[in-house]
Image 1 (spheres, rainbow, N blue to C red):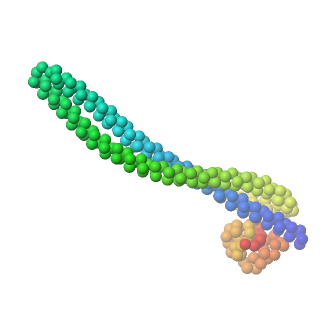
Image 2 (tube, protein in one colour):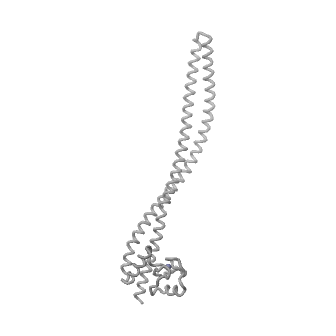
Image 3 (tube, protein in one colour):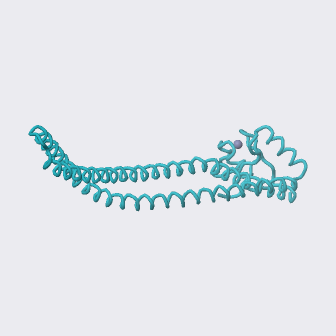
Length: 238
Ligand SMILES: [Zn+2]
C-alpha cells in the first residue's frame, strides 16, 4: 500500500506537470497573433501620423508657392508699369495695360487663397498637435504591451523547457510496472496518460466517473483507470 501511495504521489506530480505544460503551451500558441495584432495597430498609427504630416507639408508647399507667385507678379507689374512710359503705340499701351490688369486680378485671387490657406494651416497645426500627442500616447501603450507580450513569451518558453526537463525525472522514479502501464496509455492516446478527477469528472475525457470509483480514486492508494479513456485517474483536490 505504501508503495502504491508513493506511485500515486508521483502520478499526481505528472498530472499537475502535464496540466501546467498544457496551460503554458496553449497560452504560448496565442501570443504570436497577439503580438502581430499590436504591430498592426502601431502600423495604423504610424500611417495616420505620416499622412497627417504629409498633408501639412503639402499645405506649406502651396503657401510657399503662392508667396513666390505673388512676389513674381508684383515684380512683373512693377516692370510693366515702367515700360508703360516708354511704349510708342496705342496698341502696345492697351496690350500692356491688359496684361497688368490680368496680373492684378491674379494677385487678388492668390491673396484670397493665401488668406484661407494661412487660416487652414493654423487650424491644422493645432489639430496636428492634439493628434500627435494622442497618437504618441497610444503608440507608447502599444509598445509597452508588445514588450509585455514578448517577456511573457520568453517566460513561458523557459517554463515549458523547465517542465519538459523535469518530467522524465519524475517518470524515472516510477515503479517499472507503473511506468510500463503509463507508457502504454501514452502511446495509445498520444497526449497525456494521467488525468485528475474533479467533481467526479475525468479531466482526460470529461466523462462522469461512477460515484464509487470516484470515492476510490480520492483515496489515492491504488491505480485506477478511466473506463472511457483509459487514463490513470488521480485526485488532488480542486
Ligand atoms: Zn477519461
